[in-house]
Structure formats: C-alpha cells, structure tokens
Image (cartoon, rainbow, N blue to C red; front, top):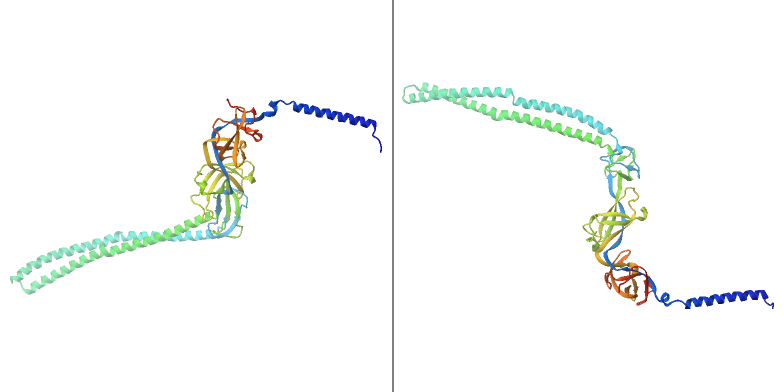
Length: 436
C-alpha cells in the first residue's frame, strides 16, 4: 500500500477547510434573514372594475367567391377563337371567345332580299286600299244616286197620274184601257224605283264595303309579312353581334370547357368567372346562435392559408331557414380581398360573438384559481391575502365575468397568487393597495 504524498494531504486539508467555512457562512446568512423578508410574499394587484365582455365562439367554414358567373355560348355554333385560359384575369367587356358568323351572314342576306319583296307587296296593298276608296268608287256612287233620283221623280209623277185616272175610272169618265195603260206605267215606275234603291244600297252598303274590306285585309297581310321578316332580320343581326361572347364581370377564369374548332353548346358553360375582389366565408350556426346575429355585424376571420393576420369581415347574409339535413343555419361573411390572397376553397375560422354584457364585473382570467370543485381568487385586505370563492359567467381570451363573490373596487391579486394561502402576509410590488 502506497502512502499519500504530504503535499497532497496539505492541499486536501486546505480545500476541506474552505468548504467548511463556506458552509458555516451560508448557514449564518440563512439564520440571519429578517422575519419581514421571509414572511411577506410579493404580489401584483389591480382594482376590480366593470366593463363590457363578450363570448366569442369559433365556427369553421369555407371560402367561396363573392360572385361565380357561368358564361355559355348564346346558341350552338362552331368556335372560331378562344382567348383565355384557367387562371387568367379578365376585365368586364373583354371578348372571351368567338363563334363562326358565316351561316348567320348568309341568312341575313336572304332576309334582306325577302324584306324588299315584302315592302313591295305592302306598297301594292296600299294602292289597292286607295283605289277602293278612290274616284272610281265615287263616280259609280254618283251615277247610282242620279238614277235613284230620276226613278223617284218618275214614280211620283206617275203616282199622281194613277190616282187621278183611278178617280176618273171610278166615275166612268175614262175607259178601262186608258186606266190600265196608266196603271201599267205606274207599276213599271214603282219597279224601277225599287230597283234603283236596291242597286244603290247594294253598292254603298255591300259591294263597296266588301271591296274596301278585301283591300284592307290584303294590306294587313302584306304588312304582317313585312313585320315578320323585319323581326327575323333584326334577330339575325343581333345573333351576329352575339358571335363575340364577352365577360359579364371582371375576375379570374375559374374553369374552361371550350376549344377552337369545337361546337359550342348553350347547355354547357364555356367559362366560369370568379369575382375574387371580395369573398364569402360560409359558416353554419345553431338555432341558439342565429337570433343573436345581425346583417352588417363585424366578424374576425382567420384564414391560415392566406396569412397569420386575422381578416375583418361583415355578415353579408343570414339564412332565414335551417338546412333540412343539418338543421343548422347558413351565414355568409363578406371579406374584401383586393390582393387576391384569399382563394375559394380555403378553410376559415370565424369568431362569432354569441353573448355580450356591457356592465359586467370583469377580472383577468389568469387571476382565477380552481380547487376542490370551486373557483376562487385572492384579494387584499389589511395587508393580507383573503381567499374569495367566486362564480363566473362569460369568458373571452383575457377576462372572465364574475357573477358573485367580488364587488367593484376590491383589490384583486393578479400575480403571485398561485403561491398564496388564505391570510398570508403580502407585500405589493406593483398595483394598488386597500385603504384600511
């Protein structure tokens, strides 16, 4: 066994002596702490106050474009040119695609010729109406009127002679042959008068009216034919303008189902244009929440895919009835999106205020402790911590409503309270103190 070096023993003795001195010094310092530094616990206080508090519930939803416009071809036709692809920005009025105009232009040329013929037919019918009401009608009418007057005059004269001869015949002053001659002439005058009356009535009341009606009907038919062709021509010209299909709104091309050379179909949308200058966040809420919302209410919306900063939107619409399947109500929140960072289809979380109180007793949420199934806080009274059991109401991210257990103006311990027990002596390092 090798004995220890004397120098090593000396160094070990020096080290042990220093350690012993240090230990005794530390014990002396601990035993020398004053009662004030050991028994009074440092805390931060604040006065209990009243204020507004609201309960905000997060609802998950989906982003949709504010407007989603489907653009289709106005009629079937061959596609001549296509100008935009998916993702392209488009301005209202820009041409999206064109259809071949050849067939329409041929139809316009045919209709223009047909319209000229129809116009000529209208002119002929107008001349026929003028003739029916013109000089020929008046000349014939005058002749018939003259014949009627002559027949009336002859009838009146012969009627007078007949009456006179009848009297003479009855007095046997003339022979039967003489009387029969005047009677025959009178009856012939009567027949001539009736014939003149019938001829005049027939022409004025029947034949002339029929001619005029026929002429009028011909004019109506000619004008109707002209109008039909004119409308067809106007429609064809409008259709020619529609071969250039333009964007009804400004936005971004969301989808495209059209290609050059293919046949277009009005039933299949050629383009879908999304207006992303503003978007709608669609959420669903329960019947307990729906009547607490109003159109125009501000809403904070988080969209993680579009950035960490919350967006402020407004309630744009509230569904008046619940969905038959989910029994929830749809709410649309409109958000301005000028830079286009928010894209349709992104998920969002909207913080909806479900309850609010304006004059509630509120304290910091962090000041509340729990234990043995109850909530409690510490207040300060006469330099000591006082445990107060409380009941709470609404809660937000930082504060909680106290419905019982505290009064406005109480001095609440908001920091250092985790290490307190009831009636512990405390020392305020920041905040207010009670005046007792």
